[in-house]
Amino acid sequence: MTLRQTWRETLAYAGPIALGLFVALLGIAPWVAMASLNAGFHPEIPLAALGTLAWLFVYLAWLNGGGPPKTWQAARRYRLRLWQPGSNGWSKDGISATLSLMAVIGLLAFIWILIGAPERPPDLSRYPSTAYLVSIVVMGALVSGVVEEAAYRGYMQRGLERFGAGTAIVIQAFVFALVHGVHGLETLLFLGPGIFIAGIVYGLLAYHSGSIVPGMIVHFLGDLAFTYFATLGGDWRLLIVA
Image 1 (cartoon, rainbow, N blue to C red):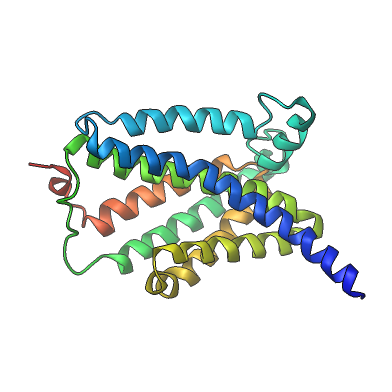
Image 2 (cartoon, rainbow, N blue to C red):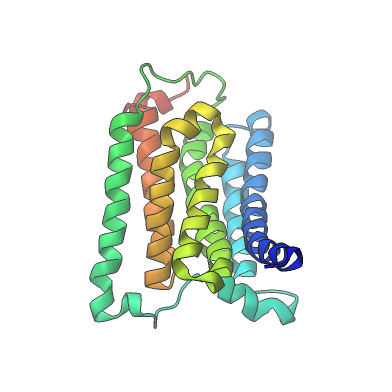
């Protein structure tokens, strides 16, 4: 293989990865910005959560082929893989496999809850109101579930599947785990292997079912359960800001 061929092949892999990361940033950045602003502007009203719900609607609609430019509509719909009810994963024979993969993700979330609880309750004094804190917990899980599935199992994995489904699933899972290093090296080393395994299962779920919607559902519920049962220790009183 010549240097030029190697460079072209590298770019062929890099393109879907970069696009997936851009889609992730596009989905998460508005929530982070609005949440930061809402902390100092009427935090008793979850304005950031309401604004983010509206943004996620527009975000998914555009990624799924809505809006301009028309020349990209089919490509956007194909890359997102939001819903394909006629796919094999939702046939009579495929539903059990789809539900089994969802159950595996649920089991992984349960294991993380058991091993991920902190030694002491987190310091939540920086949160200005109960409404703001609850919105952070719920919307944080929702944004992760929607955006990460759209970015990694949708745009990134779909773009890489031209090199083979197995290759695409492994690469997106590796990038998915690596990105969690933004939470710190300790988090990456401790949770990275588990996140990589979860990324594999999420990827299999999207590929098998032909849709990222099942992954969005279990991703949201898993992140929400982890925050409540592990981070907060299952104590709802920690959500009440005096």
